[in-house]
Length: 238
Image 1: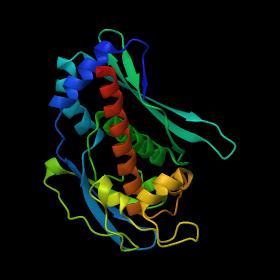
Image 2 (image 1 turned 90 degrees about the horizontal axis):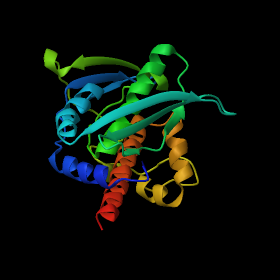
Image 3 (image 1 turned 60 degrees about the vertical axis):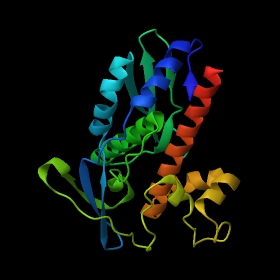
């Protein structure tokens, strides 16, 4: 996270906001049909639900949310990028480092990917859990069917094609054991995260990465960002 040079006011406002912010309830369901056959479904909080949870608390503390999305050209192809900024009424701000993933080729899939990235970026900055969600499944070649919870649709979470249970939090995600390859076979995601973060990034960007592993890495990224934010706030308070 990057803070403005002067950040006393926003640090105080964020500390108060985080103390008042509640984890939003899941308000939608998505059913994913895997390329290899079979399907699974899960509940999640969509982007609007996250904004609704933060809006009242942030308004009372003089904070607004700004999200910027753009593409970046690289030798390996275009990247979809998302940044999230919290702007305080004093003019002070804090923003995330850009979240970057290989850009989806189809317009609809690209739109879903940007929404997915905005959700992860915003939830990481807020330090809240909104899983489960996989609204970028189209970018991974899977098909999906969304249902809004307010319309009375619901479903039960199931396992993925490799029988790896979908994690419900970062701790469960870190305990997932990789059962393929030679370099890290038999290690947990937590162990790999500590030893070889580049491999974690490769898994997160891989088109064939198992949905549970991809989702678990997202949870671990959110938890890491939350921990970093808390440490920053503690340093500002000293």
